[in-house]
Length: 258
Ligand SMILES: Nc1ncnc2c1ncn2[C@@H]1O[C@H](COP(=O)(O)OP(=O)(O)OP(=O)(O)O)[C@@H](O)[C@H]1O
Ligand SMILES: [Mg+2]
Image 1 (cartoon, rainbow, N blue to C red):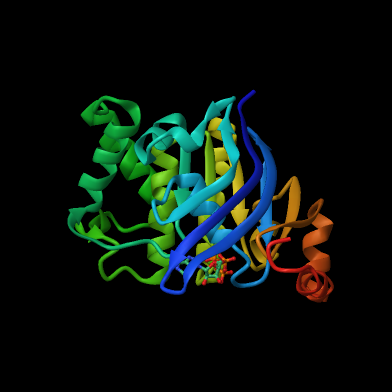
Image 2: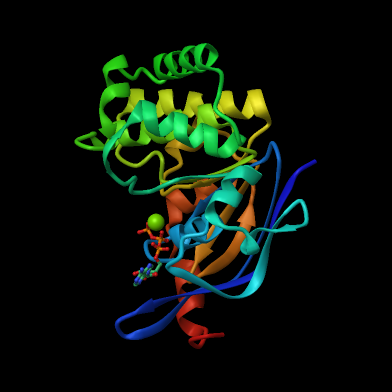
């Protein structure tokens, strides 16, 4: 059984004002097939955790570890992480001018698998996944994310998820900006991936709405760079009702760097 383990992770970022510590001791274990939701206030470091797992060069790991089945993820390049089965759906997907969705997906699939997918089956898979996500076929010929609406960008992230078939997916606010129908369509995509491949999911969100469709096994409250509390799905409802006040008081009282 595959497992992604994060231990006492400390991460900082270089800013014009100097080094800024963001993650302050994150501990998290995700087994394949499990869904973990992370909720927490703006600026608490959720996206930083997502980027650090994916290997964004801007973030420096000061201490701690990330392992996938015991293998040191932090020693892997971004490409190696993708090949090892890690996937990130970004909060703000980037535009790739001059690269069509078709070419991008095929290049990504080839890079992850180590060989190009057989053309016929691949085209069929792409068409089917796009249909499932209610994406017009014309999207395939457009440049990646260029002029896409917010919701279209998020669908394109889930299209990649369906086609690349990772072991673990970090979904950073994939629900933000989706209309009610799109939320359902995108959630169905994630659930299909869970059923078909036993995907492990780390779902970052501000809303319980998506958790009605993608059922979390665990909910973590992320405050000031670490997990402040964990529980089951009922914790999400409590957060929606009460907000983060009781955690923030603790976070403010704790001295900087503690
Ligand atoms: N490249 C960077 N340069 C400067 N500061 C950064 C950088 N990346 C992150 N930070 C800071 O780190 C903190 C955590 O940011 P992060 O994006 O991880 O928060 P978040 O929990 O994802 O917030 P949100 O819910 O708004 O998406 C913020 O204060 C942010 O300004
Ligand atoms: Mg974020």
